[in-house]
Length: 373
Image (cartoon, rainbow, N blue to C red; front, side, top):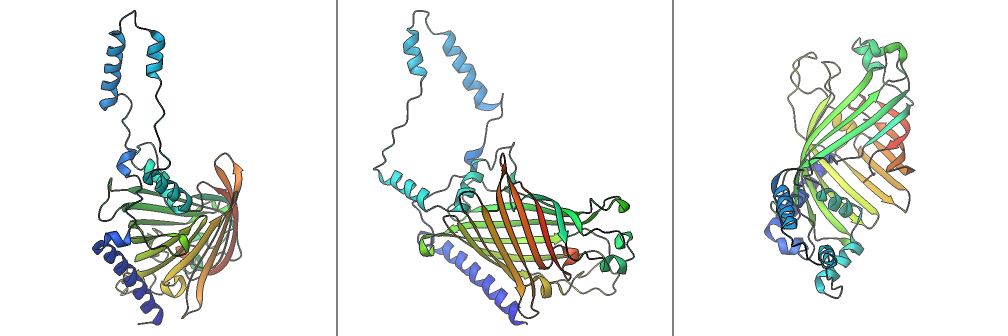
């Protein structure tokens, strides 16, 4: 067993032990004074259904029964909702104010997401959503198509369109095991589109699909005045191609997230679930990419931060035994409406699954549909 794989498993085991320790001592692991809204609170009554209609009918009936000589000015005063009494000196409101002061970028996002988690008209973003109309690479991977006698082997352009769409849906309406925990399903689609290869009829060169299920829970432990959370997940990633071009893997992962104001840091080790070897290269069963960990590594770490206008992010992954890995740098800035300009730089291996063992540098410019974090 390689040293990197040992470290990966130890990190995964430590994170699981930390979570299980929380189950045994909730009061010590979680802050009971602060509570995020439950996802069930986001449920909406559809127009024209449920109690909403009956309430409207009862309201209409009450209006028709009002005597004609009723003082209309008094009625208007009665209709005016009174402002709720808020005692800012109370312990509860002081705690809420403290939460607002110490909350970070991730906490802010979770609160916003849970406000609409079960709204049937809202889709919740998972990872970063963006489109890069121009994404230029220093080394398009033509060799893989030549080896498999694919027509794409000639005519590929170094400039292409790259985009990512990532969504999730929370499954639990209330706390499952620990306070403010969540169990969610996610799906991420990432595509590389040869829009400018008119001789090839502008095909999609590569598309990666990544479904996953993950459990997230906030923790009390927060060094330097920050907040932390743990994520445990299982994900599959593949490119849906035929033999020769097919790439896929399954992995268990855990993520430790730290936030402090506009700063977010994370460390994410993973363990690849083993697959049996192929009996022949054309065998549809078996491992399509047995050496993927040599290039993708056993985990990644990232740091993101933002100021009043800009967002920045850097993500690193690698395998110290092989010396291979990748770095991704992102920057968003105000553009128009709710959209942000987005610049992304990539250097290393594994920009896509078909390129997991191919080195390249890539620079893209486009639009961010959601925030970096």
